[in-house]
Length: 125
Image (cartoon, rainbow, N blue to C red; front, side, top):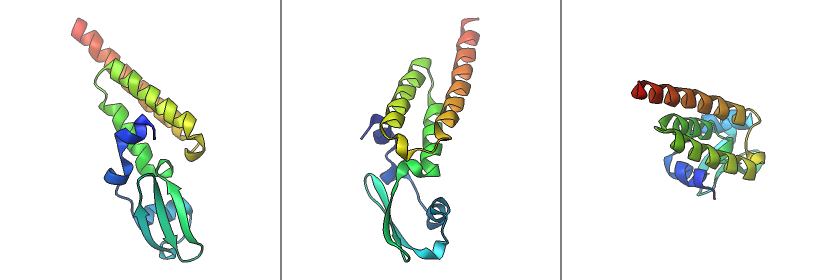
């Protein structure tokens, strides 16, 4: 797994509801029997098709967790290191991301970059 995946630890930290998965899969909630959070994927037991694997990267929690990591960076070098980790993960697992994720992460990163640069300028003044 990538550094970003290890940083986020989704199997331990994400609280995934049946409602969240039903929304992602575009199915009614009653079709989901139960969910299992495995180390690298979520396994969804369904009434209609048996079992289905879902990547953590497909979940809204992943997107929010990455955005939170960006916003927690307190220095520009920290932000740059995290951004490299995000890009490596994105390139390696591109099929597991939504097309809108990278522009979303980029927007959050640029906002944080601006904030950090402004703070640095104020400290120097």
